[in-house]
Image (cartoon, rainbow, N blue to C red; front, side, top):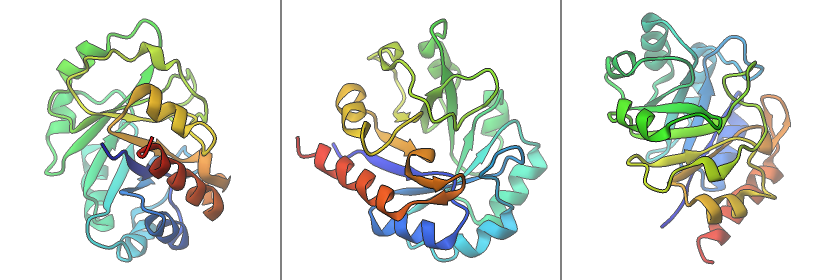
Length: 208
């Protein structure tokens, strides 16, 4: 099965086009003011206008207001919502767009319970737990904590790079992988060579 790829934390048109040219399936925009990769919907809109058909535009949120989700989704022309905070299933369900629920993984979590609670999600995005950050830590978590029988598709995130993505896919066999800091030159600025290397290794992994 082909592993899908989302390149997240996009802030520039050239980075979005480089990701798409390399084969990315989705482009992520962070609409959380405390993130170093934060972007305003008015800044994301001209980027999304350049994105061709069959590439998904994703809005990333941390405990947003309903009004902020509506505003950003409309202005930036989003196709998918990604929630990284303590949003309830009822909150996530109220929008007209499909959503992904992100979970920060630690040892005492019952992922099967979360999968049951968020059964209307299109996938669970599994990220590294940090007491200080809701995501984007750039660190890998213990993949053995992921149960084999999760009933929802898995998007694997957390510290992925061109150097470890093949091992990650081989070990976890996720539906998709999500990368941000692992393909950056600096926070919010992507490295075209790292994007290309990441995408090529994902493609090579499919042939193993």
